[in-house]
View 1 (tube, helix red, strand yellow):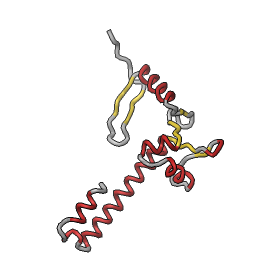
View 2 (tube, helix red, strand yellow):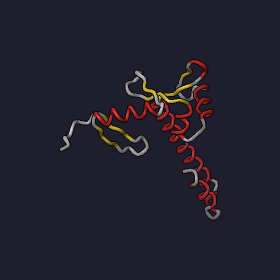
View 3 (cartoon, rainbow, N blue to C red):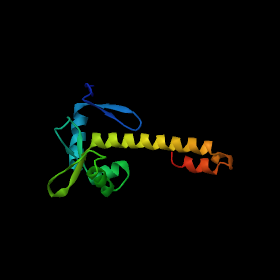
Length: 135
């Protein structure tokens, strides 16, 4: 018979807000799995995860070079390690991604307002249909 134990951790999906509690055994297995994938943990900030530019790029859907450029220009908090390799903390990547999405949504709203004021929506909805593709 399985016994219930108190949750050791809660995993939260940053995009949906869905949360799942896991026990200590599952948490240990998850950490081991992430280490096996080559995702390194760091003592900075508790259990935050240190990612390579390739891993970060895969998470947010861009190229490793773009992540490197964002780190180099200071838009994304990251660091260089020996040999010029860069890394970024998962929490910093998620914060950057969230802010970037909010900024895009705001700018798209501004574009829609401007288009409405200029009468772009008066032409059969082609512009509205086009802008919907960016949501």
